[in-house]
Image 1 (spheres, each protein chain N blue to C red):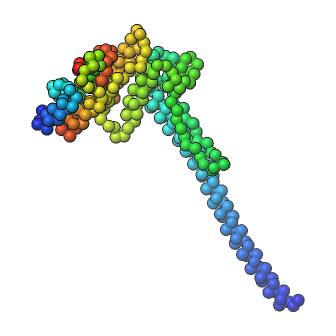
Image 2 (cartoon, each protein chain N blue to C red):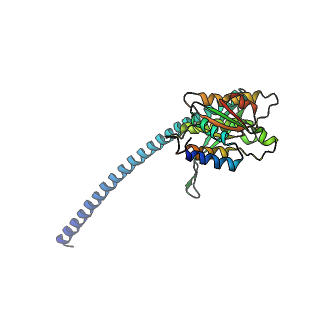
Length: 205
Length: 73
């Protein structure tokens, strides 16, 4: 092998080394960039989780606050309305993420036992909770629709021979309608005398 | 009450069997925003098996046909 051949080979190897060094630098830069992006993405994920938790907390407050107040005003302290969120779960098999779901429940008794509202009782608690829920959802609307609710045979499922619960439920509707922040106008078709008692205007047909 | 509303009231009355005055009274009360709770007691309609019908569909009809576009801003 001549000196000339050796020099040519050396030049070739130097070129290859320089090429590899450039590639290494580029790969390093890409790695650093990807590392930073991954860190930022993790940070964003944590931030999003916090924002989601905060949003859920606020939605829960807005949705269950009035409902719990209404239920307790009618049925006493041992019932509350609860909203439970199930967080999304990653399914690796189908590479899909489930959606967040929310479930409405009643909490009954001193130990706040969760109960499916539809299995709870005669349906009176559902009547009261749904009334409060509809008003809660209306207050969350932007822009709000007109403050008018039309009701047919509301509170008919309350089962109380003493009629005290009917009276308290009617008072609850009166309070919602006269609350300065809500000022809901109710038009109710009913045969319940308790609702007539709290009405500003009664039409007897 | 203008002629257009009067016509709507007559139509509602013939459709439901309700008195024209009652329909226009209900409409007037709905328009008065200071009246917060309006109760329509349908006990007699049910007990006497009356041909008069009153339910939320009719109330919504009253709101739609008489109120909306006629008196509200």
